[in-house]
Length: 373
Image (cartoon, rainbow, N blue to C red; front, top):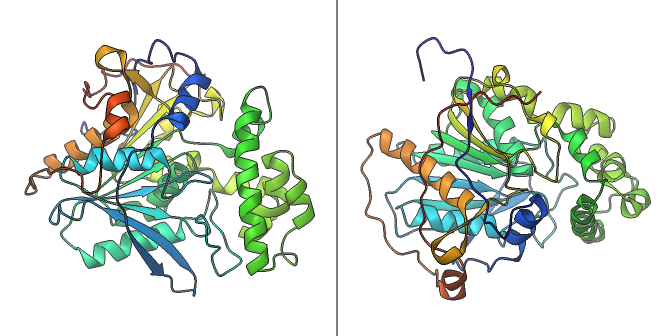
């Protein structure tokens, strides 16, 4: 960064949407309907100090001396999230190892304690970062997050500040201010996404309640009857996480207010047409630390960013962009570069046939001074 720089920078992205998938909703839905990348995961259960657990999904073990990336999913995500698997494949072909952190309570098996993952709970991610650093003191470690996982990752980075035990980070489709996101999901076609996610968290809540009774802590009937996330967070998320109410949760968990405290090189990729939020929540350049680059695209949807490859085949530009950023950071460290190998357990098949495998992943253009407000 330039000497004396006091804040980060905002760049205009080179991303161009696929011509047949030009709208925000088409971009968002296309990635949900894409073929699932096939990647073998080595599962591990990490026992936590409070008696609970999180599950890990490792891949790229054949890149034994390579850099390591921690991948953090969004709401109702996990080991089967396509954006995680696709990004892992991109990194592994560059010689990386990857590990998916399935947040507390996110898997099919309920966690043991009342506590469950949310937008503001960074403790497990930070614990895992420090554990990795203790295990591999010389390793180049990256961390990536999407949506809720992006909020958790950026907030954790800010909380760690100069002591963050990772080298580099990236985030995509970030709910910088949570309350407007919850409001946006109550409107128009975005209600379709809201229902899909609400149905998923309600299923998880019922499953958890059978194993760990929650009635003394949350308004279970109100949570299960909630028609939007504001109602659900008021009845369940906030009290379960120790917040006074939903407003307290939103105010304290939103990562946008903490970006100035990040002390590791970080790329944030975000679309201004994201149907999960509004463009006015995007931070101004003064809110970014000198280590943060915010790359904005006018289009892309929510965790979408589907572009056109050879013969018009769609491909996930976002996965390539994140992988290129991390790998460029690794190469700048002048660390030994392991030879990239084929992805263990990855059988391309229909995924390769329908989705292009290699396209231009050039760096974004120089800052153009986008005006957000």
